[in-house]
Length: 286
Image 1 (cartoon, rainbow, N blue to C red):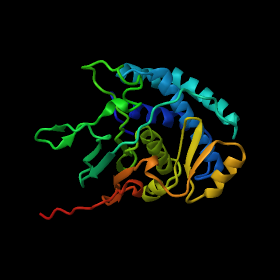
Image 2: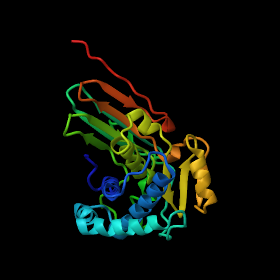
Image 3: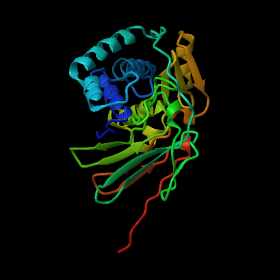
Image 4: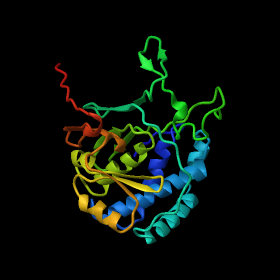
């Protein structure tokens, strides 16, 4: 698994979430137990983000601190305690700012296995365009993952962090390559963790891994899509889980766009309908 390095914090947090899930007994796909597990993992990802990364721009030193075995072990112990709570409310953590923006992602793979995964964000747009490139600069300072200290706290000249997390999966066994990424502010990392888990743990093809309902946890609330297994969320709400249920799949949960080259040389691609994703296979004639 190849993830985005600093100054993006998203790649490190995705890695942290996957490390937490490594030692957890397997749950059935789209089950009540799976939803509660994801809720607890997302809570621990937020806790670790605040505890280790804090208001700092992510650096390699902070990433190593987040992913060092002793810190992951501490996170796994906290995760065990969260899972013991079942459907009870999870302990509160500091609120994080989250502004709706406009982020897109492109995933590409060619017949030789060259893969490219690019995420680009306009935010609400700063009104400034890079001359000669046609790229809008983002008004990033309102993004909690980039400027968690709030307004007037960022030092001029410092490099910005990022939540964007273009990701590659490379199979050592058969050479299968997957390129993916998403828009969605701080939902980027939780969307990618779920799609990767669906593909690697639940063995779903890319199309099903992307189209499966998603959940996201923050502000002491479990947000969830209820289009495929609505009864699971309904039962959790009855059992006391603070829930915000979406009757339709929503761009709130990101848009994970995937390109895949299989070991046999065939291709697959998935454009997440949540964010108007599309795919195209291009044949180059000699």
